[in-house]
Length: 73
Image 1 (cartoon, rainbow, N blue to C red):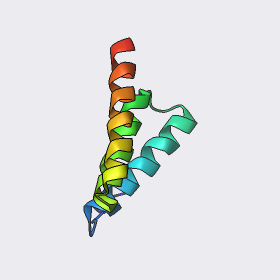
Image 2: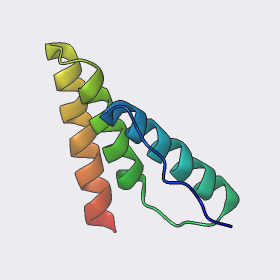
Image 3: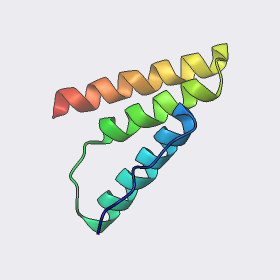
């Protein structure tokens, strides 16, 4: 069976699809990702939605947490 290529109308739609797919695969045990990988997707998605100073500070903290997680390996 031939699968059709998915077409996304926006980066937001693509990121939402990726996030949902990854979460589903994690829940099914089909993929082994670090927390930082999913956080990065959420960070990019949030940046696409708005560019507020308070939110920028929030995502700066998230990035710091992600970096700490990546160091722990």
